[in-house]
Image (cartoon, rainbow, N blue to C red):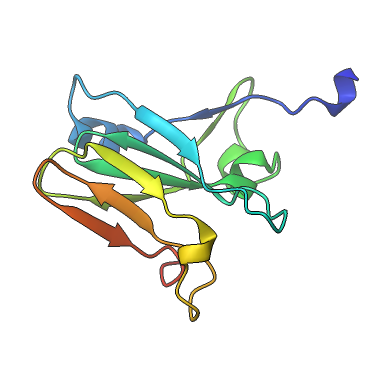
Length: 127
């Protein structure tokens, strides 16, 4: 059984992004994208920190041979992420369910809420 357990990964910001996020900002409300009724696996992880929604590709995080991990020893940190910035502090970031995906995009959008506005961000048209 021990050989089947995945190695832990540390999700964190690179030093510059950590500085831009602020001293007292910590990850809040991290979650996976939806696991759909069709048995699709999680594709993304999102966490909120200050004015950022930070999004990781879950397959890259799980891949022990990904570029992020090549020169690291011990507990490996994944710095391969995308940041969605808003002008105000983000209250919540959640992936919509796949049934709400627009037909030309394979993934449902990320919904980002600030105290004054709710907006969406499509992961499908960003690389």
